[in-house]
Amino acid sequence: MTREWNDRIDLRSDTVTLPDEEMRRAMAEAEVGDDLYGEDPTVRLLEEESAAAVGMEAALFVPSGTMGNEIALHLHGSPGEEVICEALSHVYVSEMGAMAALSGLLPRTIPAPGGLLDPMAVEAAVVTDGGYHSRTAVITVENTHNFGGGTVYGRPHLERILAVAERHGVPTHCDGARIFNAAVALGTSAAVLAAGFTSLMFCLSKGLGAPVGSLLCGSRDFIREARRMRKMFGGGMRQAGVIAAAGLVALRKGPARLPGDHEKAARLGRALAEIPGIVIDPASVQTNIVVFRVEPELVGGTVPPEGTAAAFLARLGEAGVLGGQIDATRARLVTHRDVSGERIDEAIERIRAVVGVAVN
Image 1 (cartoon, one colour):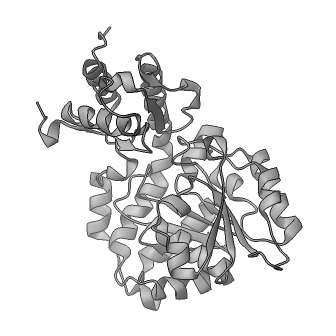
Image 2 (image 1 turned 90 degrees about the horizontal axis):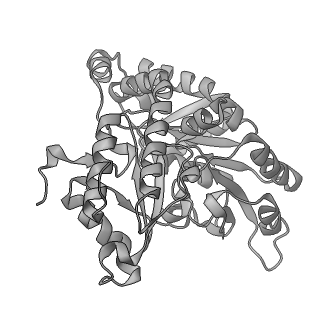
């Protein structure tokens, strides 16, 4: 029987978190002004602290990570130029073709295991002399890589990609929606991982727990132009301090909670690896995202292979565990602060029950 909504364990994404009491109180008490005039003190404080957190000169508060990414790509490139990105990257898969629709840019996709670009493949893809080919506008990386399973780029790996960009005089953008997760996983800081990039975007509304908002970061000149583009793209906000106040709480308090999310994901990954018909290497769970493959026998063998993930997720939904689909055979579960360790254990029990595996 399908469970009531309030009994469901929502692991679709870390975007489903609700603002906590401290955030709600900060929002109610926020000092505000008109941000389009640069007069909202809470937004300005959030932008200053965000820039400092990633070691960049300036930051711009935007409604979403997609808008932050697309403003950056627009400023880095010109119509007809290419954006080098991994084949399952968010800017290519999950932004509705915005780089083409809004900026006339073309994706140059490179498939990579775990979503982590090979610097040699990036080098081979760069085109600086037009001729008959589109020139490279910008090289992008996604850290952590969402559909790669929350995988992380370590600093040495990033250095090699940044060196390619420097050799060819090409700007770089980091989709750092979950950059603080990457920093926690590597035992370093977001600023260390951001160093050398021309621009970077990070989200407040994922693991950090804010209800809305992202920051686009870069040089002061870059952010000055980004502010103009935000208005053009429809992202200008007025008394935005009301939501920026929640973002400040998320920025200040959220990173310290991320290790708990990672531990819950690791526990979930280990449990899934023990279930026949689910294929996952527990070592692949590096942060708070768990991606696994569903074998046909797990859904009774009556579903065609191209529908196994959807069929399995439907069964999980009936048992009160919500997940997301990556592709025809792969599914994703994401841990976050609103699902406790006890609820993760309960989710594991429900998953085992769905597939008929005895609970220890």
